[in-house]
Length: 290
Length: 290
View (cartoon, rainbow over the protein chains, first blue to last red):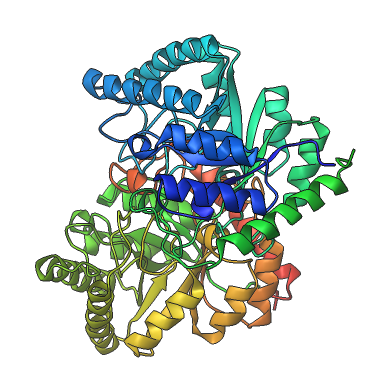
């Protein structure tokens, strides 16, 4: 019995977020053995929350919501109007997550998900801290947690390493703001797969597992052995969610934001089942089979 | 005696491309023991070619020029006017390289250096093939070679893997178009550091060595041992150039294009000397000490 809950990103199964798409993702996540479905809120207004919550409940699946902001609704901007639009998007996304029955909203909550043309400014960083402090306080009233997902340099200019994320979380200073590590981004930005885990320690709130090229786990070169040994070292008991993206499953917006140009697989269900077995094997090898 | 020529990118030393900057980069590259200076042509019109060539000749250094295109001058566009501007930039850059005494123009010659918001179109790809075929034919009349640098998904949507680069080179069909592998980009896109080298084989024309986070070689997690063993396996005798970027040395344009937000080192000269020793050690360990 694996004690960490295992999740899978909905874009493994479908690029849409309408009721039929969510039902399909729920069904396929459950079939592949997962405990959690992760749903991106990039087009949150399209989601039928009542239908989605019902599908999740019927399947006995937990939900985690994730998102990045947009360049015209960005709390790391210097422009107060753009910051306000970003803050609105975050508060709305927190409510959607809550309505879906989720307790964790994570992702690049602190900036647009995209390539910036300049470094973060001091004003922009101060805006991030102030908006996320308010959001964390609101989240606490709902019994919810925020995750700061650490993304690579092409997806944000705010935090690219565990060290930078911890400093940002310190500046926010709310204990329901946790760190979210992602092996795909760590591969680009961190020294290795051990130091960031030990550095974050018990402030680690969520983990994404993706291969270096975002394809089948084990078909790239990432050192998952070291990563899972480090997670065992800090006694991480939280959720671990699999992500993989291929041009075979397209979201009209998110796939372009993530620069998914290549076909790395065609069958999301087969991929998800393989990843579930792979993650269980890694966890079991590290003593998690109580 | 190491037989591969070793190079270093000018942005290790200076963010400018004026005569004093080029003289400084030439001097520091030579001091650190390199055979080649690589100069980006992102602001080619600023370069005093006569002064630069004289500095290179005095120091006994070879020159390699590299560049990406821009979104308004992009041969992978569907818009004939944008393609024409990109073609003009390439022909101008070929001439500048020639004037500097160089015989290799390489980089993302096939697209803007940046994050695309959509996948490559069939028309765009056809435009790439047609413009690069003409450019290669012009290069041949000058005794010059073109390199197709394989960049990651956030820097181009045209070619992200060795396999895709070989197909593009086949479609161009000119034997003075060679493949340029870069360990930093391979880390994101390839299965590992061996397969692409064996796949490219004797069509490999140039190599960039950069750490996963673009800092000191050996301070990240890249498997340079496997990469250099693979280069030895195909008897690669070409040039190998070190790249590293830190917010300590800023080009007003190129640093933002490359998303250089972090300070990974302050002293480019010390970095370059370290990398030269590191590369020599890797080559010597693989029998290259004739």
